[in-house]
Length: 501
Image (cartoon, rainbow, N blue to C red; front, side, top):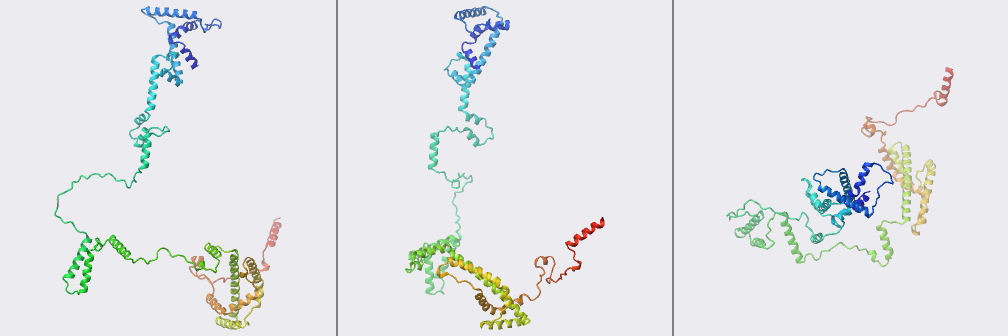
């Protein structure tokens, strides 16, 4: 609709539209609704256009000659319509920015679209204002900032927006920054503000105070001079020594100012080390870490490849599988022999203690048994051997299984024989017999009385149990005549039910 109105407004100005549409508008307003056949033609012939032009000229002449013009109803309607059409045309142009730009630049005549010079000037002024705002957007936004805005905010407002290309000034600044790196904050010297306190430059007669080191050095020199010249108790050797010390004072490193300072001592030590190096006193000192020499590496009778491979394996703590199995076999063997010896030693200690009716008698019997065991006629306990034979046989079978697995992995020279229970028992008898006396004494010292709980030890001690003499209570079995089990419980239950019935 807006485009049709623009086209309609572009065919003629407001005056022409008034002349063309005036009679039809008046007729429609008076006659009201009319039929389709009596309507006005949309397009008039050239003769009709001439007649309309003549009529409009006559009306203009009448309007000019009238001294007191009275506004006609037709003219008021036409003026309202022209203003409405002009506003709609203006809105249509605003909806099309490209058309407004062409009208403002003069590429398209404003009269073709029903614009007057005033509307054109307003449109051009608005375009110029929008252009000015876009070009100076940073300055306008900075001017609108509040007074409490920071410096960074103002710099961002005034900054030029990124256009996709780096300017020459930015390129030069970046190159200078890359070529000359700024100093760290710690090294940057702050500006020194001149002091406002006046400095007295007048000469003074005051002698500056000497330092402590200088005064000590002067005192030492004076004492040496006095000893050389005034002291009569010194012999020639002592005087020569004092003169030598005095000469050292005048050498470059002889007089050290600030004797009490650490830096003075360090400088003196460094000077003496430098002099010793110059004299060649440090030529024969060994340098660096000592070389790792191995005699086997250069042995012509040892295979070098095998030697280095073994050395690498040793450093990495890697062992062959048969070595791991050997460790397992040794552990099982030691555990078996330790249990066998401990059990047999306890049996002999109890037997001899019971026979000797005390510790001393048991010790004497144990010593006699050790002497007999050397000849192969020591004490044996048949009941114990019969009771424990099955257990020890199973243990020997387990150890032999480990030994068989080890022999399958190990080389020929490292293989082990199988274990035999009889051989292990005979070896155990010979090793345990001399130790039975010590076992009896140790057991007597450990079990001197009934084992109890000392006061203050364990939970019972903390709860005030004190000394507890072990399990001293009696357990009484229930009389079989008075026993009350599940069977008796069910019988009593059914009997109660029958009584209720």
